Image 1 (cartoon, rainbow, N blue to C red):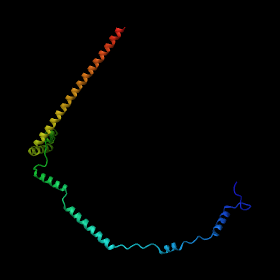
Image 2: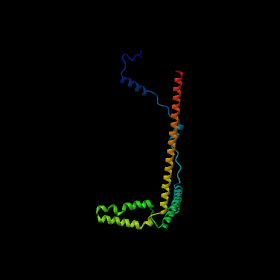
Image 3: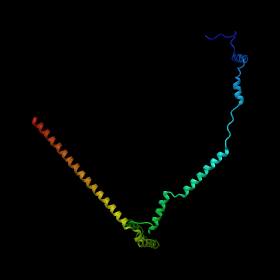
Image 4: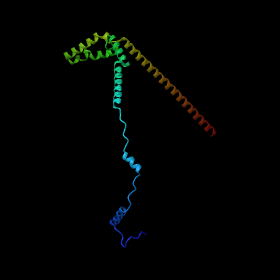
Length: 204
């Protein structure tokens, strides 16, 4: 059961708000703050110490001077990569040829530019150009072909052929072993099967 109304009729929300505001106006004023606190507030914040801008500027200028000296030192000092590039350039200047072909590469190029490849077209200009290119490459064969590279290439192919031959022999030997194993297993199975059949016949 709720609280009974103050008067004969319950107050409206407007009357209740007016009564609440009237009660607030009759309350005593809040107590004043202590004098000590007021004195601290009146005093205000403590002033910050003044910065020595001249000293800071001189320090920054000294740092900038050191950095510039370091940059100049790094620019004048050659790096290891620069030394390596210079070494490779000197080695390249000692060589008389710009590039080297193996005999296989030479034959491939000659096959591509041989005049017989375009002779059936009956184009004299195109055939003449192929013939000129073929003669230039053929005359420069001694400068383009490297016998050592050819020997290295032949040795590489020989090693590859030897490796493939060994692999083929190993596969054949493995296949023969597997065939022999399966034949023995089949023989044992047939023998046991015959033994079981003979035992059953003897029991009958």
